Amino acid sequence: MLTGAAILASLATGTELAHAQPPFPTTPMERCVRNTTPDVTQTVTHSGNQVGASFPNGTNPPNGIFPGDVVKVIITGAVRIDHWGNTYGPSGATGGHERYWKSLQGVRWPFPELNAFSSVARWNNNPGGWVGDPMRTISLDPAFGGSCTSAPNIPVRLLYYINDPGISDNGGQWTIRTDVYRATTTCAPGFFYSGIYGCLPRPW
Image 1 (tube, helix red, strand yellow):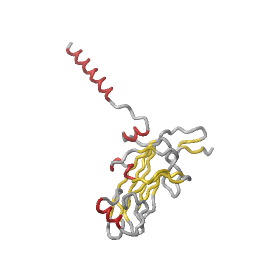
Image 2 (cartoon, helix red, strand yellow):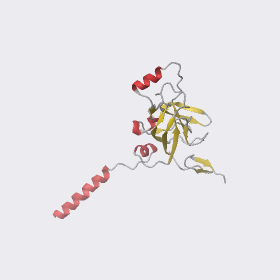
Image 3 (cartoon, rainbow, N blue to C red):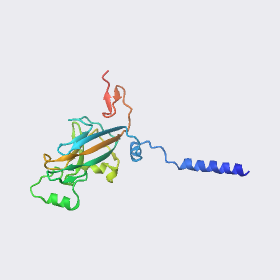
Image 4 (tube, one colour):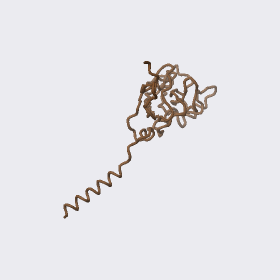
């Protein structure tokens, strides 16, 4: 009798544990928040003296992020912003440093509303142009308090910049990993799923 009761108790506990487990993540946002494997990932190096970087990578890349997708970014490293060794991470200058740099007269910051020397991300539709306002790249990185972010309602690429009015004397680099959780990897008839570029017309 005791053995039977113990078995029944064990089964009951196992049932409770099974019900307590969180459901398997199904939406792109759930998969991103749960840190599951992204459908597409790309890592690029953004050198301090380089105008920009992008997802997808390339000189003038096509759109690679689509409505319903969710994006997460992981950015690390540091950029030197002059020949004297002043160096900043992706957050850029903060506190007294930020106030000092922004107090300089005659300096035209590319993104005046964002921190000096910070990494800046922008959605861009090819060929339509900018989508939404510039944002701090760290706003897409959970390590900096950012979050998984839903894509705009039109196809876009994600362009990265540095908020520096003069990059010729810069050095160092940021490493930027862009993870994309797709809303779907199923393409319409006549198209095939390419991964980084989404659905493309079949060449055959």
